Image (tube, rainbow, N blue to C red):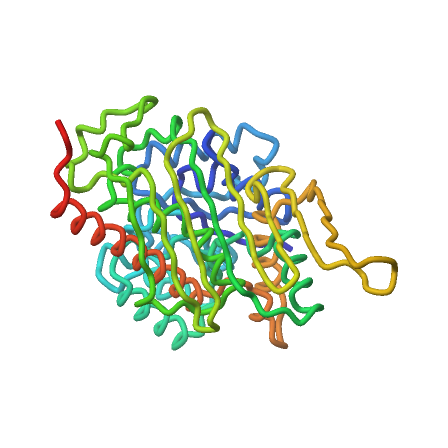
Length: 397
């Protein structure tokens, strides 16, 4: 029996890049093997889509792509795919400006839900780069149509993250705070649209969204008015970048990215969250850490995107076995691929029937919209602070 999948987007999300570990097609091939049937690739850039398909047909994964057709639009795909070629799951790896709204041209997921009733959706993060209100309308439509949707916040599926959740649950801990630090290596980020916050949403909305989501996963709902942020702007002395491999003058000044964002907020529980995002490093290796604090505990996740993330656990000593002291445990989480785990979970849920299978999806659409709200709140807080700062300060010549 085959499992039919429609790929939406022929870029790096679905087919890989040098910048990061995203490559959904490779993981689908690993999960499903000979059962995988890619029924189509939807991408308005036909040259790119055909090149991606030709590459797969020339690889060991060719059997999964022999029935694949290339389409410019969802409407074209809907007119062609029927019967045994109807998709069971659509992987939406198109840019965020094309989705997360009910406005024509920005409504990719709704097009898919209407064209292929019963088809589940796996949507990449962030859910959009448009207004948050549109995302809530999309969420309501998904609920009305009973569409099964998961969003690509794969770090929730990390073995280390799940171990952290287990420690908190087993010890009945109340999270006191979260601290996220994301330092980007920007030298290979050469796509001009990424450096334009009108197109990409900006580094918090588009990139730090993973750490904002992890923060919410541990801290809970955020009191949005409590968010405050400061930024280093592109035109400030500390914001000068020496290893850009593109011409930033092609991006209007008011649309260029901040180089650093430092944000804090309050959770509804009373806990505090902090985030630092920096565009600073050269080469390809990022520097990322995420911490959770609770009484007696510090849980630190180091390099969660890497092939061997590290979980450092400081916990109280054991009373009754000599002097009580703090213990530090370091665990290397090798051979863990949360990207694979998340896609595997989506496929398993689609394949199952009955029971509360939806609960196995750790990042449902409505919850992902809350993360999206937080990222926009941080972006706006940073921009507002910078405007106020610029109005008060004149730099020395």
